[in-house]
Length: 359
Image (cartoon, rainbow, N blue to C red; front, side):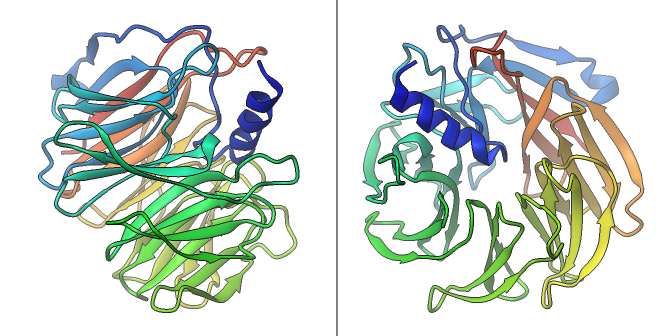
């Protein structure tokens, strides 16, 4: 592995939050769909490819896009897989020259946006032909001279918010149509790991590796407040979800505090600390009043009653369940499941996509 690749991989791995770099000697062949007793369990699991990360559904719900970095050793670029959401069969794929991590999709479904973490950029990909139609590479460099890792992406009102993994971190504000940089929000703490748009407060929430939640006004793109819900206790806050009806903000930590925090979305006060263990991805389902949490270390996905916080159901998804995606109707959950790393940063097989029917 080159010195540059090693440094960039460590940069991405340092954020842990579902975006750790993956290395493989060669890309694994695309695997066949494996169904696990769907009539009884409602679970479909598909081994797909190396380096799977985040997912996004088309606005019509007829396509599931999955970001893949593929392998790192002797493998250039990545792939955006287009799957049938019902069967997880491949219905299209876009081979990209850079590696892909987080995803967003335009309201009309014509464009998928993918962060290229190792190269510090964002790519706009046409869903009509799978071609990269535009790209922006950010100019910031760390003290070793490498690009800031472009990790999470949030699309709101024609604007892309992209979290930069650095210390201090930044949030890039980009025009979604032109991919022109509009502003750089600086002093965002150590590593921007999570982004969320709140329908209730009309603000953007930014989680970072220093245990902070930053509140950004999208009209001015300025940080209005900074919360540190666990005070001086070590925390690496990651992903967030909102219950807009009750004003609750759910925030996960899978490496330091190993918990899910329930915050008042207006004040940042801790309403509850869920002692469920390491918590990575989180989704709130208003249709079913449920909270879903992936646990990377234990290999489980939990469903909690969102009122009592009691665990309603647990799915074993070894070895490492990662990202979550919930359908608009609240009845289907998608999960990426990653393989553990060997000492040489290789893995023993492809990552998987899981579809869970909640009805």
